[in-house]
Amino acid sequence: MVQSRAATVDDWLAVVEPARRAVLEAVRAAALRNFPALTETMRYGMPTYAKDATTDAAFAFNSQKQYISLYVSPRVHALNAEALKGLDAGKSCIRFRRPEQIDLALVDKLLADTARLDGADG
View (cartoon, rainbow, N blue to C red):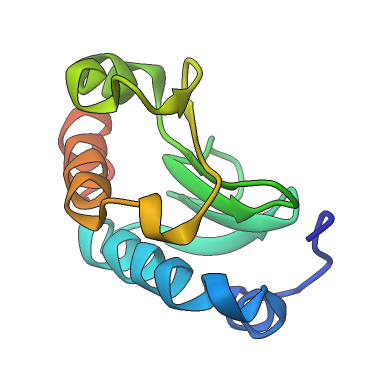
């Protein structure tokens, strides 16, 4: 998927590759569960979660041509460095070539840590 022009996350999900849709919906559900006080919006062509339109996103994810990418803060990434070992990960981006590689329990932990460390839980 090239950068999406979808206005909402529902619109974005409606056009993602069908083989990826279930895991992307699960990632979204984890974000909504962990960030009840944040606003879900589309920024930079991907779903993002932030306090408002003027603040940096606490979390984002995307379905790109080669990867599904998750974007967490460098603090959360560092805290989970051992769990992320062996994954294709940069300072704050974690990339998965196939949907089945995504450990949803790890995603939930990353998001819970984000909420706790970055005040994204309200």
